[in-house]
Length: 256
Ligand SMILES: Cc1cc2nc3c(=O)[nH]c(=O)nc-3n(C[C@H](O)[C@H](O)[C@H](O)COP(=O)(O)O)c2cc1C
Image (cartoon, rainbow, N blue to C red; front, side, top):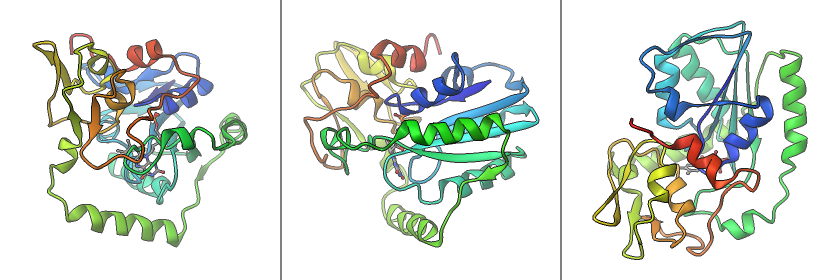
């Protein structure tokens, strides 16, 4: 049993290598009963500011997992900042016994810092990283990925930087420009129902936005941008192994 959260397909790509039909956290989280039993249970999620997205934190807090082997795979694009250690702490707080946490380096989808065209030219040896992880999981290895003092310092620096911004600033990261033609793709890929089409235009509703950037990356008009200037406003990304339809199926909030 594998659960995942994804904005641009990286984490879904990894989750699919662990199990053919992984379960979408943005959809499962609406179930009235969050209790799961399996021989092995895994969670795959991207790293945001060295931690898991808020929805994944919420899922871990609210769910009872019954298994002898619980593991977490974190996808990231540049610097994990000790995410494995921070996620282990989160599991401890949630009363989850976690056997294995590892990180996988893929394309960094954070538009303010990275040019998606350049990112996609870099070979990050994802297959090589995954063959190690698949081997570890088959062997039910117990391990929390190594975290250095440099990683911890990077996270402290990040916290100091973000503490200077207003608490709700992340909720206003997404901006919809008048290039929007109201096609509705952004609404379909949003994992938190934070975008709706009103009067033929997309409207972003702050409050529960996960800042996954799925909406910005998928917009065919490049009408959705970030309030922090982008590295390359013309470049967008979706994991090349994940179709647009799969991303919609992963995140669509049918009736939620
Ligand atoms: C809001 C946000 C914050 C991010 N923070 C980090 C980070 O701290 N370190 C890092 O290496 N990558 C960071 N990234 C990049 C993603 O973790 C990475 O591209 C991930 O594989 C995306 O997974 P997905 O395609 O499943 O959404 C961030 C991306 C976003 C959207």
